Image (cartoon, rainbow, N blue to C red):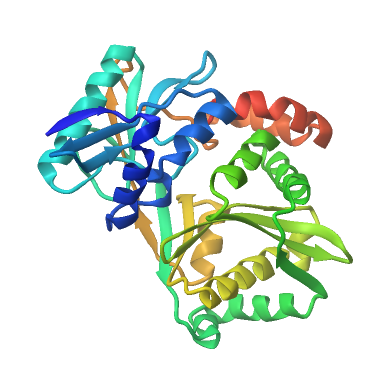
Length: 340
């Protein structure tokens, strides 16, 4: 067995392996290397294990080098899942050892693996995040009944609010409402170019669904499709979205459309513990599942804390929430590229 860096010629074999391995996720696809390098300038170090000419494991990595925040090798930046995927534990260990060696060669502060299951019990882990995943019925009424009563009533109310939801890949509408949503949260928004890259590199898997009220976009979500799963990944809305129940219509409509195209798993995504996002997903009847974010500390002596809940970022968040929207869209991308 050998472990080496993936080349462009390896991408089809890499994706074939990812498509067949039960533990692989959408974020293990080779196209993410192009996205991260071309949208943000973050160099990818995609490790490929092979034996007898066949791929036996993959570990996607990219380096975020920022003077303000971090110098880290991460699997994978801007993605909620990552880490090694391999045919056996020996190959998994070999990939992690190669990643650790790469981190030391680059002299980064730390190596971070974002995993659905633990791989290195001796490494410190961050217990800040959970994910929410649930199997869907092919019957819409069964899925609606799986939602707790109060949230079910909200969904029914949203269906009568005179809004229309449709997949349209309207990049301008999506960016308008999503950037407003992030500004209101006090978070810098990434560039429009990044969203365009996702739609271009994953044309078979990335889709924007927009909710409109009186022909104006009020909420939108960029989702990823992978095998029999749908992942509503980047969702946001204008100020009116909450009162109109536009988020509720958006996710319910997406769930129904996904079922109609054969999807079996709705991945509601990552949330921080004890946040509004966490509570919202629980209200939909989803159960939190722990994520295992493990760290190999190279130059740094303690785990990084880039969370908005970190007290040292509170003043920055309050200031950002008061920025005019056009200014937040101008200043956001240079900062957001380092917050992967």
